[in-house]
Length: 361
Image 1 (cartoon, rainbow, N blue to C red):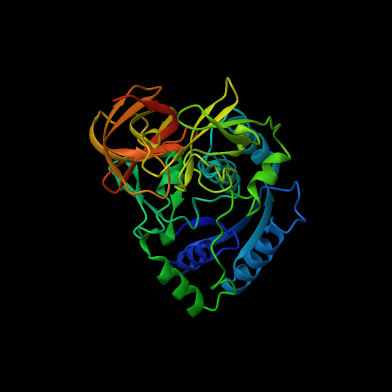
Image 2: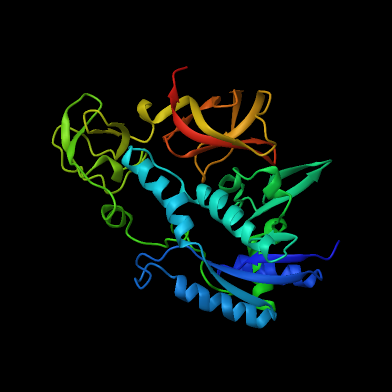
């Protein structure tokens, strides 16, 4: 393998730390960058960027590599967070990690790394890149429980050609084992599950600071009023906890799920039972599309995920340059506008788009 100058995004977590170690082992010249992308309430208990930076610095120390601290907070606010709030305000449920990867980690960070003379960048994502002729393919990470190709589906040929995912070939257990073996200080650090760069925090309370909330009725599938919501932005389709319905005399005790939002009348609809028809969809349409190869797939039998933690579902695709439709072999649960529909051909991630809504049939 050609020895190259590789700039690694060191987050303070174990995956990027082991990525840097593996690259160094392979003989590359490795430089690390810590990205700071959020500073609105940096001293709060939820924003761990100070601790993450200290962890990244001690990893760089152990590995004997340079670490640069770069602030992309303004980029994040303009390119990711503003869009995130717009989507919530419109009643949709966005996936900020998808946009964060496309706009910050593989755009602002990539540009910065190239200015530092990098030939490649690397991150700790569980995914793989394969060159096929002159083209680059995005593949799932080999650990099916950790695969992150869903969040990376907006990457293009230029970005993939410059990107390495050193842990994409490994199971998470092996990454932890390597970290412990080489004495990394964060070998046992738990994985972060919060919003990209914003950390783990009470979500409704956080959104409340940025969004106007207009309370309104919650109705069942018969149109009967069963409660009051605190603002449509604060609910997502398929949500079960924290809806605020309880103790209704003329309904049984089956759990309630958020099923629909009517922005025009400011009404939230909730239904009982996980398998209620309102929660099942055979088809969806998506817009704001992005295809790894630069063009949509020709059509035919593929598979897709309409949310991250989901098995690939067999589907047929019909795509134009602006949008695509997916028709599934089996009904999909709680298809949510604003989330990403990501299309696969086996282990190859083809790209995807933002779900606009469901279709009949």
